Length: 87
Image (cartoon, rainbow, N blue to C red; front, side):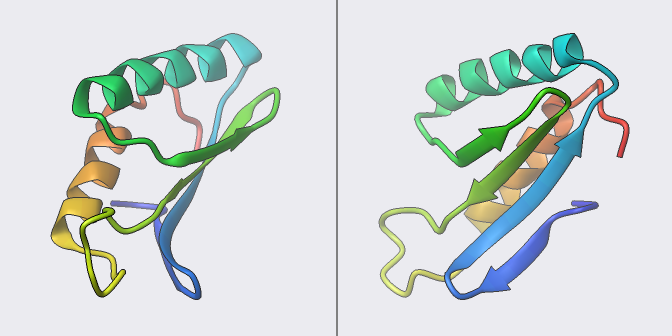
């Protein structure tokens, strides 16, 4: 889970992925989109030419709205998709 930051207000996990080129960034975002549709869970995503910022909020059925093991597992699976990352 290298690079993920947990924020308290609002509760979330955040990470910035950086890439050598627009094409590598696009490949990552395409793979991320396919994965998210498969598991039916969607993080907040913002991106530019060579970076993508991912924000994971607590799962919807989490009454306390706190980051859970399920959220960390989701973040870890996103990390495993990233084969083109610089940082």
